[in-house]
Length: 424
Image 1 (spheres, rainbow, N blue to C red):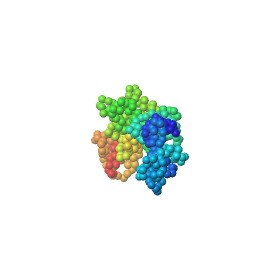
Image 2 (tube, rainbow, N blue to C red):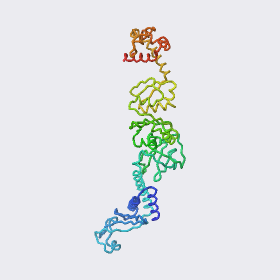
Image 3 (spheres, rainbow, N blue to C red):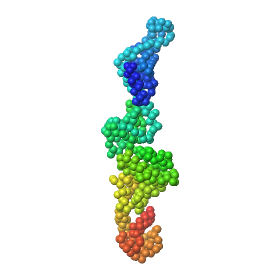
Image 4 (tube, helix red, strand yellow):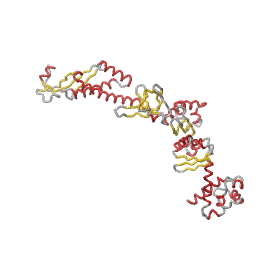
């Protein structure tokens, strides 16, 4: 038993980082509890001493010396006491040595259970002490095994960490023995009284931490990642700002010939990464996120931003399964509604025709469009479009043919906005 204890001490110190005195205290407390439960005649005053270098166990119980015993668990007669210690006196406390073998099978089983509980608590404290200050850091380990499907147990050396299935991209595949880097996301208590380290590779902060490793200017906060959104395994967008006018934030993150960003992309298994300059102006930030596509029309509401882009830019702006537009919306914290320019023009034409059917007398008055110069208005009148109703009924191709340089859809926009204001 002594050799077994010494082996336990050395293993827990070396592999788990648990100090020997913590282990000794846990075992001593468990033996005290086991002794009180299973060995008859023992009182509450039980002492267990374990030698840290030899593993020798000495167990004592204390009893009060009395003339007549009324409580055998707490008391011992003067005759019995003097048989053990000749100079004993009534009223004194006598320390009686017992051996571990006296515990029996039940005591040993109880001790093992309590030792297990105590050591889990000690291991939990070690885990908290070592890892609680490392939250948000990237740490490396080895895939040890899989539990509950694709949840990975990662060997970090002294402890095992958990990389849940939801915490890494679905496209990533691992085998036992593979090296893995991940972000230390959380240290939490478990139901059995221990603690576990939770890792993540899908959180946006994992990408931020990778850039901090590759870009010294981010590490020293010359360049700051102001916003980052991610669809793990597919695409990440980050907006960066420089606090040094001489430092280009985007170029700094990309690196010479893309060396810095390529290292991050490689770690993310070729996930696409878009780096754009941050702006406090949401509309400017939106344009930065859409570049090189241009916004042809934009309307901003409380929770929705509606934009119109050229037909050839539409697939890029939307992205596969709407991912790009969705990430842009997350970056702006609004929903993004995207229309093709041809689609938008068709909607304008339909609205103009619908308006022309309304019995509104003002549509038959002399034409006047807010925001349109008098010269263009005179040209429209000269071409026969002297009222709003006539303009509304016109074919989109007819106006530019008769009034060169005038864009029908620009006029339609202004007309619809003007009529909307009057209705409000």
